[in-house]
Length: 204
Image 1: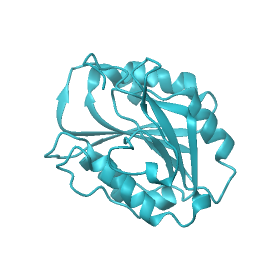
Image 2: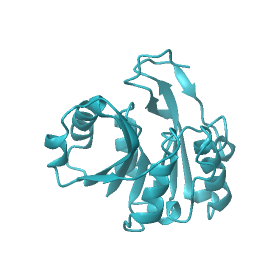
Image 3: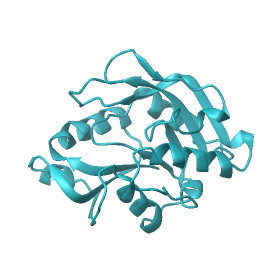
């Protein structure tokens, strides 16, 4: 099972993100956790998406715009099986075939806790984040959408400094510190996630 955790803000992106999930995942078992904070953008009707039993909706009060409070809500309040995989899927991103293929291939490796990917910008071939070794887990070199993580490890963590945009980098630093062994991390320098796929801003 794989769990996608999305801080729900941009309502108008959700339907096409749902289509992306269905097309990429095929017959894979998944849950998609849509966690709305105190602010929203857009008024798209999500009733069709929410009729899917695999889509779980939550509404919480938040203070900051970065989505870390929603991610912490998942970590602290939503129970999964220890061997399940989790992925932080922002509502302006999409999942890639590389991520799904790696989830399917590596799920049988029970020693593995984290799968780390390089990252491309938007729908371009511009590489935004390169990954080489364990030190790639850290501030400035890891995005919140750069890795798959087993629930058994994620449940021991917390995104501190929810007020800070770089909370994902700080989370990556924490992951690096608590990895039980080098074999618990697998790095794919030539497999990719994507960043800001649905954003019209300049991608950097």
